[in-house]
Amino acid sequence: ITVDRPTKEGRAAILKVHSRKIPLSDDVDLQKIAAGTIGFSGADLKNLVNEAALSATRFNKDQVDNEDFDNARDRVLMGPPREEILSVKEREMTAYHEAGHALLAWLLPEIDPVHKVTVIPRGRALGVTQLLPDEERYNMGEKQLHSQLAFMLGGRAAEGIVFGEHTAGAADDIKRATQITRKMVGQWGMSDVIGPVAFRHSDENPFLGKDMKSQGECSEETAHVIDQEMQRFMNAAEERAEKILTENREKLDLLAKALVEQEAIDSNDIKRLIGVSVREQASLDSLKQSGKDSESDPQPE
Image 1 (spheres, one colour):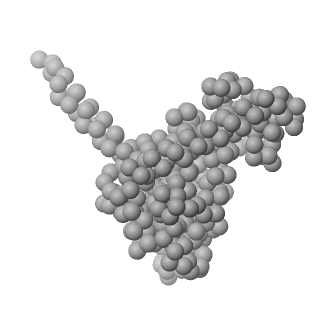
Image 2: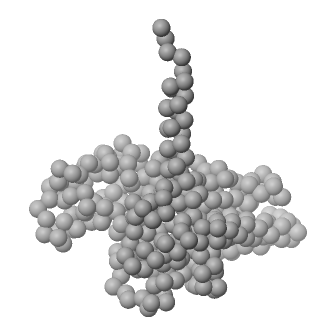
């Protein structure tokens, strides 16, 4: 049985149930927390409340406050911090890697807002760029998917631009980007060359075309074209990421420097360093235009 992820109202109700026996501070707004946990499952929300309570205990607090929930969300989304000391070189490379992700998210309006960026090793990663969706999403278009690919390859692109080489730290980014590309080409009909055809595939073979050929679903020629299309999508995304980061090198350097010095920065820090995001600017422009339109409307006598 497949259970859908809860809506905002559902998340608020789940949070209320799990926090019944926990003393909450007056600054805790469960509705606001529900709005900031898009994509969380019921188990994730239960874990969030438990982690918030543990955070309060660690700091000897009588009540669980909003800061505890922020810390808990970081642990749920990014994993617990690891006590691991990076070398100066590793720290700098990680900072540029995460700055590459963050800057692309800041400059591509199709990407979810940046919540926090850190070079503190967490979970299995040396650094993390955490996005926080600001709306429920049930579908994605081609433009958004291509931007997602560029964002995912942004860390690798930054490494190449700054250091002239790539690290193994981009392995998971490449894996996730390849999975999306595979679906775009082989399931969602987003390749003009292949057309609207859906192929079955397994996750064991990284190349969709070879997988299709082994299952006897297409000819060797078609399998080759599928692999070429996947490679084309990936190369185009990386080239786009490199172009944007090169054109905004000064901003990339500012973010990386801040990460080296502070270890973690949030959206307010980024805004102070490089200005508002393209996404936020578009929203501000829309509001401004709406106000002008209202002023120009003839008033009833």
